[in-house]
Amino acid sequence: MTLDPATSEKITGYRPQKAPPEWDHICGHVRMLVAASADRSPYRVERLLTATTRLAVWCHRSGLPDDPEVWLRHETIDAFILTGCTDLAPSSAQTYRSWLRHMRAMRAMLAWLERGEQAPPPMTAPKTVSPPYSPAQLGQLRGWAERLPGQARGDALALMALAFGCGLTSGEVAAVRTGHLRRLDSGAIVVTVSDTERLIVCRAAWEDVLARAADQPGDRFVFRPGRAARHAKSTKRPSTPKETATPELSPSGSAPTASASASSARPRPRQLSRTS
Image (cartoon, rainbow, N blue to C red):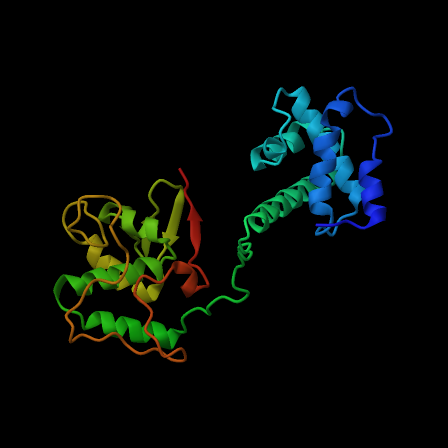
């Protein structure tokens, strides 16, 4: 990597206006780090020099090794921002953090290139999310569940009632027991979410499923009641005989499993605060 003469001059000639006593000891590492990332960085080289110098001085005074690998660890940068930038405005401190983390990323990329390997592509999240199931699709799924044989039918309906009807996550679904269900005088079913203070009123369309579960004797799990452990091994749809096909849902043309998350059934059910 070759820097242009102006950038090289700025780096080699840099010295803080009020150079700390440690400067002569750390200056070589500071210049090396900035030179390694300046060519690929969108930030001005003067800003990288300032931030790196401040980080290096803080590390030295904190008793950390004078090692750039240690300086650019995520935990070192975060500790520096929290305790070494208290004189800066929060926004300025976060800017320093962005600069230093960018330098870490550039250094990692150079390490890949030095080994003659292709740098891994950056991880990205999809820009769009799948739309929620429509009422028609939910009706198709329920119709499929109603036709399942034996315990598979009860498991599928319980899963859908807790996920679609109450908006619970997979972990919350697995933890609900019949003792967490309460039938109000109006006929509504209220679910107490385990280990929280949340009370969820089930959607009317799914009340009958949870009402049947609430009427069962004893205190057992609502979903897969035969298990002993709180967390089910899987919250995917129950296995079914090969001749029982899942519905083809439009418009995607594929059948989602009955373990679809609660976010697929927005808007979420009404939540009540527990009162004494």
